[in-house]
Amino acid sequence: MIETTNTSRRAVVLGLAASVAFGRHALAQGLPSVAVTKDPTCGCCEKWVSHLRECGFTVTVTEEPVAPLKVRLGVPRELASCHTAQVGGYVVEGHVPAGAIKRLLAERPQGTGLAVPGMPVGSPGMEVAGMEPDTYDVVLFGPAGRGAFARYRGEVAL
Image (cartoon, rainbow, N blue to C red):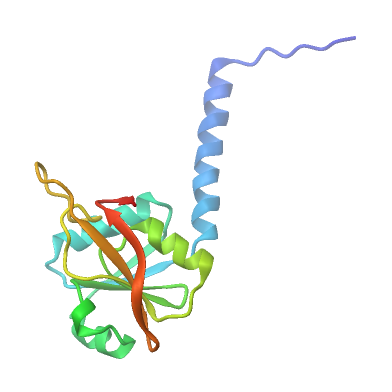
């Protein structure tokens, strides 16, 4: 005997909504939390934090002067930007795309962390309406030196 079940549209929608919600929760659980330190008056930093959250990271934000933290964590002056983050034992300096951070955490290269020096137009948090995004390097830095880890145009890896 074959038994049939009539599934209502509401049940299907609720099931899909639950799977999406639990899927996001599971994704966030698989990524380490990001601790961001930023100046209290910086708006682009808030946009970068939103970018990370939209990409599945859990983010905590501390608002205080960041220069002493950069020195303590070994961020070279030439790579400095407006905010500093710590995630999975690495330092993340500036407007580094979430995709580069995920790759860093997956590959675990030797180094202190990643940096996007300055504030390139179109990098996460630095989007400017009507302006073409810059092409920029994400730099892996550490005691052994520094080198290009990835190249982006806006938020798109090249």
